[in-house]
Image (cartoon, rainbow, N blue to C red; front, side, top):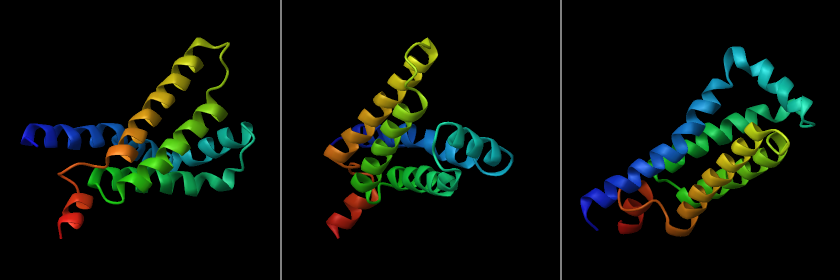
Length: 130
């Protein structure tokens, strides 16, 4: 594969997963209590927040690095679809419709990674060559 395609695969992984690194880190600190309260208002236990942060940050970093990519991408796809259903299913609100569809599209990107893997410029590819 030409190097530009390898670079595009890496850029794609960074773009689709980078959002989750930022979101996960943003939930730490001052936003922690507010995020926990928002989760509880939607019927979820606030005690799940550390797991959410770990999945967002850890899973995204795995995807970016291309390590255990299929597993991490599948976990993030499931998480993203679940978040769409729990937090953005108010279709009477046009903004929530957009947010729902954004989550569905991101999950689609992760599912593409599940199907095709991380590509040549990844730890997974390096491990399979060795």
